[in-house]
Image (cartoon, rainbow over all chains, first blue to last red):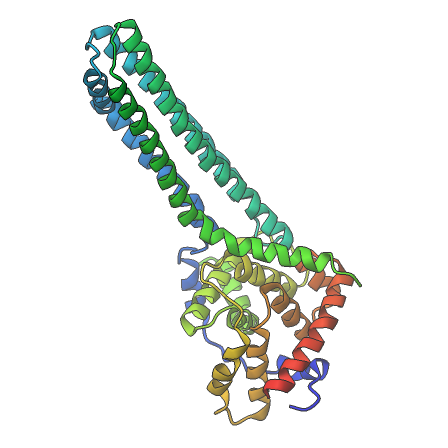
Length: 224
Length: 163
């Protein structure tokens, strides 16, 4: 194609025969379909996570299973099971659970607020920035989840040492080392799993946006 | 059926060429193209209520269609690597009309560009003023012009090379 000129090609482009694919009834049918855009997915995934953890939390509170399993760790270390001990364990557990659920509820609310702020008819750069703001809330949620996990583990570990101390129980060095290594490994593993999960769910779909925003910023910073 | 829905359906029917063009430029298969078309129609319907006629219908449609294609659409719309040009070009060589062959080649060449640049070229080809192009993307008018001048050179080189 010798001497291609985009300006003189405009007419050909505008007159290209674009076959009408859909009639009025097919277009109206589309309005009843659900949107498949991924910002909506992020929002619903976060809601699903909240519901899942709330139900799981309530189930454990009702069953008392988690504090039972924690009690058995204490017993293995030689602590005596007393009503007082069980009571304080239950209290700690309920406080931590309520704290965790309140934080998640706050984030679901924030997700919803930021999601509502995303308006498709805004200019591309503003739209991307709004979605990035939405992403920041997601990132904060991930970070808080990891911090909560570390905080919970620390509280329970401190509680174990407190119980052992008040009941004057001497633990052998090897048991203590095994216990500490166990806690560190399981916490690290849990953090890794959380991190991988969020990278997989949210990371992939956000990368594209960063790339587009970078391109817009590049255009705006071009030298003439 | 609500008259607003009917009015909207007619509007889409009359302007579906624009949505088809955007869908074609941002996808690499017919299935994805149809998916994107539907997503754009849905997003247009959502913002139809707040469209107050401050801008031209075509500018508003472009804005929503491109925003959906570039930011919200799940499927990847990766730029085609240049070495794929021959394969894609072969798909439309059968077209008898020379002009149509050129249009098809231009589509393929534009698809080698990054997302935002594709949008600039498309709006330019459809004669949107630089003011609207810049406003739709959130860049300055001067930058839109500078960018488009560079893109003209790039497209000329590629079109002449692959024709």
